Image 1 (spheres, rainbow, N blue to C red):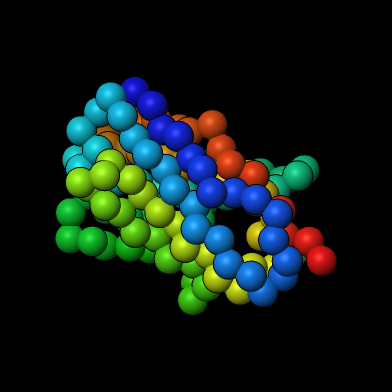
Image 2 (cartoon, rainbow, N blue to C red):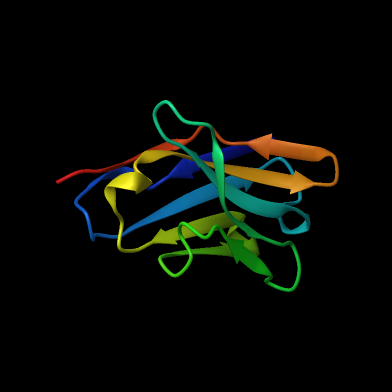
Length: 115
């Protein structure tokens, strides 16, 4: 089982990034997928989730209207489109696959927002 994130980088405030997370070793379409982030010196926090069916999505209040989670089951990939990035979005971003008691985490991808 593996989740591999990519797409992080250094951007300026107001710019956009799209993160990707590719899963392997499990039936990706069966799993709910989520993004979390952890800023320096802070606890890991939930950012967004997308369910395995029905395309049901939820986003944290802090990113609502700026970030969008989506998935492509044919590519075993979940995305996080991030617009209007600000300094507070600087963090390591992790994806998680979860179904009932099972969950898998990726290794994270760094996003730095700096002027």
